Picture 1 (cartoon, rainbow, N blue to C red):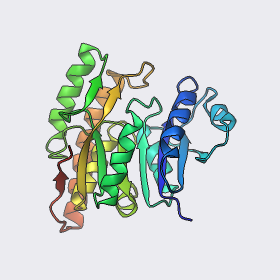
Picture 2 (picture 1 turned 45 degrees about the vertical axis):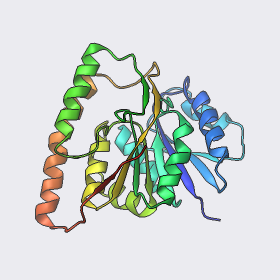
Picture 3 (picture 1 turned 180 degrees about the vertical axis):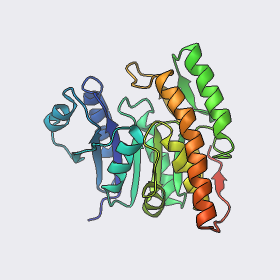
Picture 4 (picture 1 turned 90 degrees about the vertical axis):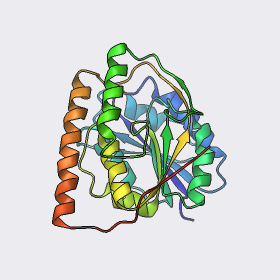
Length: 253
């Protein structure tokens, strides 16, 4: 029987947070009536992350691990998604900051024909509990402003909870070139160019200590990546004009 849903979890030195994440994710997937799987992508961990995955007790939800030598969250998620052949595929962060009660409504929207479901902390019905510094909050605001022209209509491009139907996943992940934290922007821009129906879903999101994101180092790289993404997509459009249907931003209560 074909796997219905694969959930990709990119991991870099997550031995402390990973055990709880695997338990919580497996518990959430246990309620899905058809076959699901968890795919952990080790992105060059030097701690015991791989041992944690191998030691995890086998249960009704299979958990497997692959390695991604190319560094970067985008590279790891791409490797994991393209290693699956399920009907639907998505990814979540190793800290499980987005509560998995969003999973069932996500599947319902995918079943109904939505191509991309995006967890959105900006949704008016979302419950967001963040402890970010003033610097990170200011950087996030500036990043959202800069992203607006690349991914119009999507209020939160960076929440680590996104799910796709298989055809859309193949179309947007295969040509993905952004390897760092800004990869979501390229993904969603490609989805819009592909004519995908995109839905932003309210989530319960809690900031979890231990993030590997550095506002100074990775923030600068993310802004630089936006310029590269724009140039990349403009170049592709010029080289191979594509006539895509208008993207639909579905309103989700």
